[in-house]
Length: 111
Length: 110
Image (cartoon, rainbow over all chains, first blue to last red; front, top):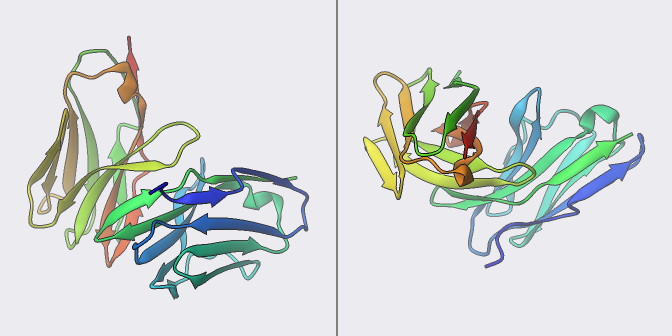
C-alpha cells in the first residue's frame, strides 16, 4: 500500500478563494481524520469519519470549513472562503484497530 | 478534560547517549497511549502503542512505559543516533479521540 495520499502537497491561494484538500486513506481502514497543525496551536483534530460517516466535527473552526467522505477511498476538506489565519499544515490520517497512518500533509498558505 | 503535557520541549544530546522523553496526562481513564515521530516537513509516524492494560512496549532501541495511576508515560531511546533527530509526540486515546502533547524536539549531535 502507498500509504495515506494527500494532494496537493503545497497550496498558495489568495484570501477569499475556495480551497479543496484531498485525501486517499489506506484501503481497509475504517476511520479517517483531518488534522490541522500550526506552531501556535499544535495538532488540532478538525473532524473524523467512521465507515464514511462523519462522527465528530466539533473541531471544525467555522462554517467556512466542510468535509466530505463520499466513499471509503476518498475524502475532501474544503475551505470557502479562505482567510490568512487558515494558513497551516493539514494532515489526513486513517486508522484501523488504533493503528494510525498519516499522510505527508498539505501546506496551505493564504495570502 | 484530558490534557497532555510533554517535557522537555526541546532536548539536545551527543550521539550514543541513552535518553528519556516524558509525557503526562491529567485523566487516568485512557484507552491507550501512543508515541509518534515527526520529521521536518513530514507527516507523523507511529512508533509504539501501549494499551491501558499494558505497562510497556518495546521496538528496537525504543521502549515506552505507561503508569496510568500517576498519569505518566516515558519513551526511552537507547544508544541515540543522529537519525533519531525529530519531534516526538505522545497522544492519549481518551473517549476514542487522540489528545496530543505539544511534542519534544530532539536533536542528536554527531
